[in-house]
Amino acid sequence: MDPKSNPYRAFLRKIPAFKSLSDQEIDVLAGVIKEKKLEQYDNLYREGDAAKGCYILVRGSLKIYVKRMGVEETLTTLRPGAFLGHVALLDGGQQTVGCDAITESLVLYIERQEFDLLLRAASSFAFKFLDLLTRYVVKQLRESNKVLIELAKSEQRSRRPRSLNDPGVQAILKDVASRMHTSRLDEV
Image (cartoon, rainbow, N blue to C red; front, side, top):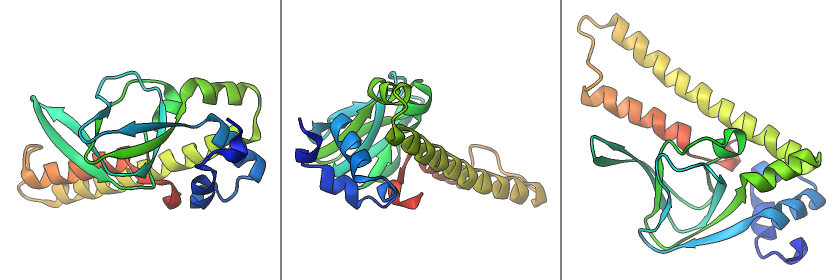
């Protein structure tokens, strides 16, 4: 498909994080993205799956979850514009959470193999996208560290530190996990 005729080119152009991309770089992105339609309750990926790429939610809603002692715990709900699975482009490891469609949804995705080819070809888009991913992951890490440091300081000052099983501590840890697995590209 010709990137200029890609129906998602205009959508990509509207994402603030992509404002620094030239029209040619947007064309490269539009040329490598694929779409995946999900029915309600369809699984996008499961915890432990091989990470295959990153996703941008175009339409619908998704939930990010973990299973603890056999019980599924939702970490967050994603809305259009959410960016997820981005660490897969960096390390190609395993998914650390699961992701299911809450409603009928549409995601755009970039496969790791495609991205690696662009990097090897020294594509300017690939380097800008890599920079974006790096800044994005660092931002998430800094925010999570800030929350964890505040929790540690609070517990250190307390005369009766809470256990990790305390509901308040669990809520904070859930918030940190949510921050690490989701965000919006316009927050970078």
